[in-house]
Length: 124
Image (cartoon, rainbow, N blue to C red; front, side, top):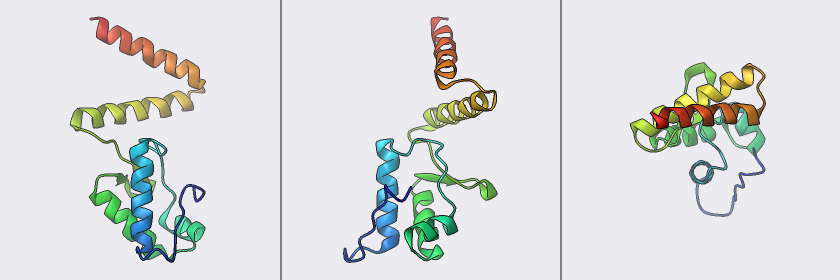
């Protein structure tokens, strides 16, 4: 993950804010897709050479902005953007993708099944 994050100690912008800005842009661009699990605060701090409190501050700001969601001990994830309907659909899609992977389906087969289900639902 650190290959995507570049912190400049000479920029005049606080490290937590640099991290917040970059993670926000990666989420907005889709480079970090909805449901992507972020590293733990301690692990990410270690990777980036930052204090854990710095990463925690960035995560709190991102959560306040709605960019990430923290699911307790399960970790922090890129949150669904958009309205409530889109957020629910993105959460359902994430659940489906995880279930398909657990069931051993290939990516292509999982996508084909999802497309069939969407076609059938919209044909009604």
